Length: 284
Image 1 (cartoon, one colour):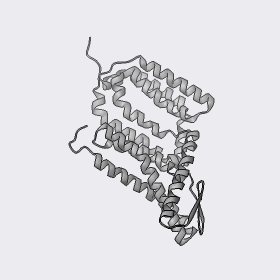
Image 2 (spheres, helix red, strand yellow):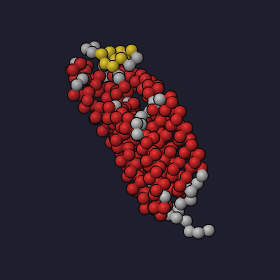
Image 3 (spheres, helix red, strand yellow):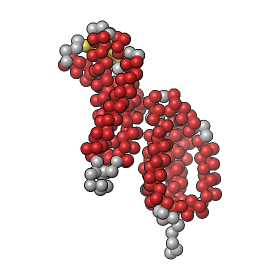
Image 4 (cartoon, one colour):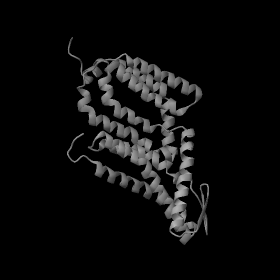
C-alpha cells in the first residue's frame, strides 16, 4: 500500500472538484444563508449568530497544524451523509421549515469532508463544523415551548423573593402587580434570549479552556441555571426600583441597561466557574 496523502496534499489534488462543490453549495444556499443572516440582524435573540462563524474559524485555525498533516482515507459513508443532507434540504424546502433547511448545510459539509478526506479529518473538523449549529435560529415552536414556562418560572421565583424581603406584590401568570405599577415578564426578561447567547458563548469558552472533557460539559450545562438565576435577579431589582421610585424607574434606560448588566453578570459567573474548573496541571 502506498503512502497516504495528507489533508493539504488532498486539497491540492481535489481542488477542481472542491471548487465545483463550492459553486453548487452557493447555488443551493443562495436564498437561504442571506435570509438567515438577516435574522441575526433583525432578531436580538440571534444577534450572536455573527460571532459563530468567526469562532468556528478560530477553532479551525487552532487545529490547523494537526488537520493539515492528517492522512486522508476517503470514506463512502460520506455519500450517505450527502444524501441525508439533500433529503433534509428538499423536505425542509417543500415544507418551508427554516431550521432544517439551514442546518442541512452543516450535514452536507460533513458529508463532503467524510467522502473525500475520511473519518480522521472529519473528527478533527467536528468542533468547527458542529459549532456552526449555534448560528441557526431554532424553530419558533421550540422557542415558544421553552420561553413560556420560563417566563412563569422567573415570575414565580421573583415574586416569592420580593415577598420574602417585604415587598407587597401579587402574581397572575407572568404579570407582577406591585402597589404602584404592574410589570410583565416578557420573553426578554424570561432568560430565553440570554440562554441562547450564553449557550453559544459557554461552548466556545469551554473549548478555549485547558480542562477535561467532563468539565467542559459542566461549564456548558451551567449556562442554563446561570441564565435563569441572573434573569430572576433582573426582575427582582426591577420590582424593587418600581416599588420605591415608581413605574418610570423600571422602564426606558434602566430596562435596557439591566439587560446588558445581567448578561455581563452571567458571563462573569461563567468565567468564574471556568477558573475553578481549569486544569492547573495542563492535562486534557
